[in-house]
Image 1: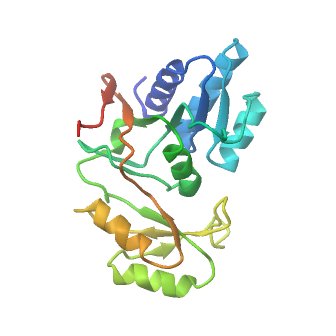
Image 2: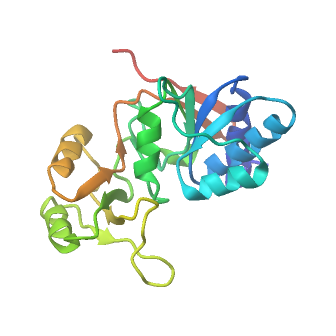
Length: 230
């Protein structure tokens, strides 16, 4: 089988197989990351000693249900590895867009608190330039109108994310998400700086400078992309 679900499971199993005994891991969020958690729980049940720091309440609940030990960030050392998905992976830079599931703040904290990051995706997430879809921006609820206006002034066409009930979506951190539509992003670093200059922006879905290793499930098998030297 080479459908989307089968590809996600394939790459999740491969990522979980790379985890070594004694590791403290960042546990990502989203459909592929949840498959990784399931695979890790099976390895833990078979004797692998690991613990995880979840990047969302949903991931935490899944890990607890499967019996995977959870811990807080170690006080004196980075996490060994974070395994997470991505909404877009730009080639060849390996810059990422994340957060369409709403967990971008915790995902970014965890990624930057790790020695290494392994990104697991299927080939549909590979893009020649970031900005093919929505760019999530986490904002505070207070003053949301002027914040959205400033995002609009950057040409980002923001829309406040809403849940199935029509109410504003609230992140695990108690914030709102503005889904922006920048179009292809020519200079992701410049856009990140412009977003951070807006008072009330908590975090952005641009994950830059992480130099991740990216494991991609394709219909022809697994492909690995490494960050370019320099």
